[in-house]
Image (cartoon, rainbow, N blue to C red; front, top):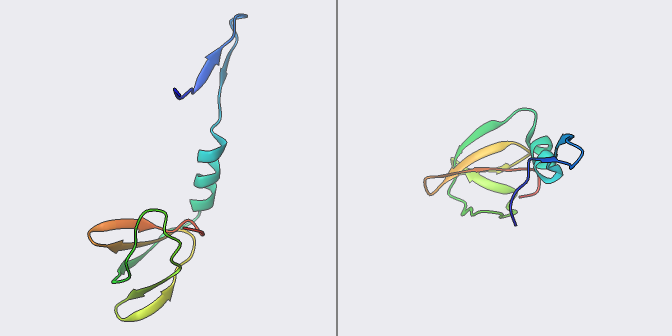
Length: 80
C-alpha cells in the first residue's frame, strides 16, 4: 500500500495527513535521551529487555535510554 502524506480532493482543497502511529512513537521518545554505554546483554530489534548489564552492573532502562550491543545502537521506547 502506498504511503500518503497529503491528498487533494476534487474540490481542489489539499489536506495534509497525520501519521498517528509515528506521532505516538515520537511522543514516547520525546524528552531526553541518555546514553548508557555498551552492554553485554543480548539485544535485538523489538526486544522487551528492561534490565541490561553495563560495566558489570545491572541497569534498569527507561524511556529514551540508548545502549550499544554488537556494534548496533538500541533506543528503549518504554516498552521495547
